[in-house]
Image (cartoon, rainbow, N blue to C red):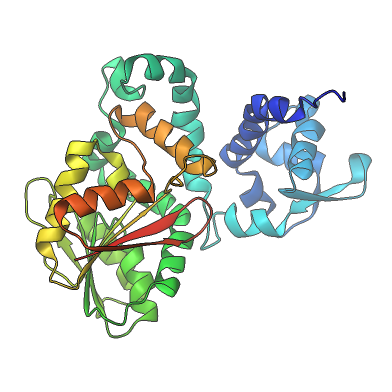
Amino acid sequence: MATLDPAPILQTALAFWSSKVLLTAVEFGVFTQLAERRITGKELGAEIGLHPRGISDFFDSLVAMNILERDGDGEEALYANSPLSSLYLRQESPRYIGGALEMLNARLFKFWHDLPEALRTGKPQNETKHGQKGVFETLYEEPARLEQFMGAMTGLSRMNFEAFAEKFDFSPFKTMCDIGGATGLLSVEVAKRHAHIQCTSYDLPPVEPIAQAAIARAGLSDRVATGQVDFFNQPLPKADLITMGMILHDWDLEKKMHLIRAAYDALPVGGAFVVIEALIDDARRTNLGGLLMSLNMLIEFGGAFDYSGADFRGWCTEVGFTRFEVIHLAGPSSAAIAYK
């Protein structure tokens, strides 16, 4: 009988090595520093302040990951951004996602070390564990940092929001309210493609000027409005279509049900409630990204969790929604839609 290859186990067990290499490269600004150039490892290492011992191992690891490219071998080899890193990891790129990777490196990498404690206790393992304020509480106290954080998250959301704006049938709807809309990105992407819809992005008061500035930069201030809402203490604004992008998974079941009921109450008959999440597959076997995101919610918030389309349908049926669909967007993410 052939011996089973342990490679898949070892690859997963050692995945934190490659993760830390990539996150460190973003922290050091490797991809932004390279820009459109092709330079030697010695030159690049000197520019970002590396000791000679690690230069070739560090950059060649990124080459092996297909994140950097290299022409030639040895000390005279020239390193350059790959098409992937040029698009997503240079700060000048409109599709930059490095801000989110910086957050992973600065915060979540060390918090995930305490996953065993989270699993045993059901309690968060973030700043609050050490008596500090939670990340969102801190962000909302500092407008500049809040804007920086929301800009970082924009890169991760853009592909999903673009896909939703292209795949969903918007023809029956005239108004859309995006709840927890942050920079207004979802409203912007919908408004770009569907001229008949009036979109409004709602969030807490400190967020509104950030959203207004982003919408103005997109040239859509006449099509996309902003508003303020505290969705646990106020009714949701009425609209034909109510959306929540990466919002519902932040909460425990009681608060999830509050938001679903609030959306139902704000919609007309024929209206739709849309959540965009790393939706776990119904059998809970294949969408590893969604399952890991749910563990991340445990580490961040304790009782918060991600869910499947079947879960969403069950909760929405209980509230009174009558028809459902799931549209895959990008990567592990999907849009789950409930119709009133």
